[in-house]
Image (tube, rainbow, N blue to C red; front, side, top):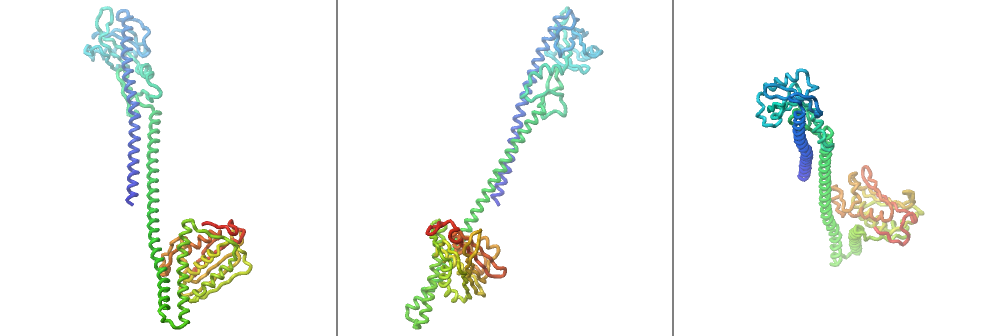
Length: 491
């Protein structure tokens, strides 16, 4: 859980950093545009000031005294007047000015008083909602009086003339009236363009916003993918660790179970052999009984060791089966006859039914005998009060092919539904007290499954609702499986 919380914390931190990075990108992109706006504002103001001086000087030089006629003045300049501190003289008429413009201008100039403090720099004012440029120090008229030249201008024409040519399409800038609905930022313009400003265009803002949003989404997506990958890796690691722990526990249980399984027959063999060796058994009947016990336990020990060795070879890919044309009925009968004494000794009612005219199969006789022996051992081990075992061998058809079906049925404790999926796994032992108390290695059914698969057959189990289990082994007839007579099949 702590690892998951750490992963989530790292993902959240990554998302926060991604958003901060995107915001920094937005600020950087906007800062570049704002710097360009400052440059445009400064250049436009400088160009206008120089153009204004030039236009006023030309108008004054070409005028006749303090009066004159309209010359080729710039389109943004409409009217030039002279003001000597007491009277207003028209140098260039203002064609588009309102009728009372001169009176309003003169009143405004009277209110302003002395303009000599302007030191020759242009100052700007608004009279009757018209742009007014005040330029002190210009020589106006024949009397040589130093007067102030007053110029009426059109702010929009000034913007079109001096600002618009400086804005390139890639700058993403436009000029607009300043107000509360302006863009994310604005660069105020000065002088005759007072009240106007440069701001990013709506298209530029959308473009930058899209870029920032796209980069933010990509950062967040990468963070989410990294988190998903980290969680998947953690899940896989936890699963591997749990699997290794479970495997280690299985191996430990396997060692304990094998030790118990080996000790029991060894102890019996040693006990009865020492009893026979001591000469204390005088009855021939008792001696034969002891010999039978020693033989039975030796066979049991041999089968146990063979199961372990065969499973190890199968897991290592070194187990080989020699598939030859075989009569399954004879293999089953021989194995059953050899096991009858063990069934009788454990008080089992047992039956064997073999159908006639069974098709031959390509099989390894010893391997098929081992399959049957393991299934019978399971039936003996996990039968409780009702000790019953029946074996049926008959003809059957599976997957469109004919073959031999071996059914082993008992009336034992049965198999729980939750254990069926793991029944044929190596080292698996059901978490059932009735199973645990019987001991075992958990390899028998796994070995049966490997052998049946190597013979291209099928294995299924049918647990009864109350008790008992039926295992069915299907072996395809000769000619209906890939391996031919005498061919070694590897598993």
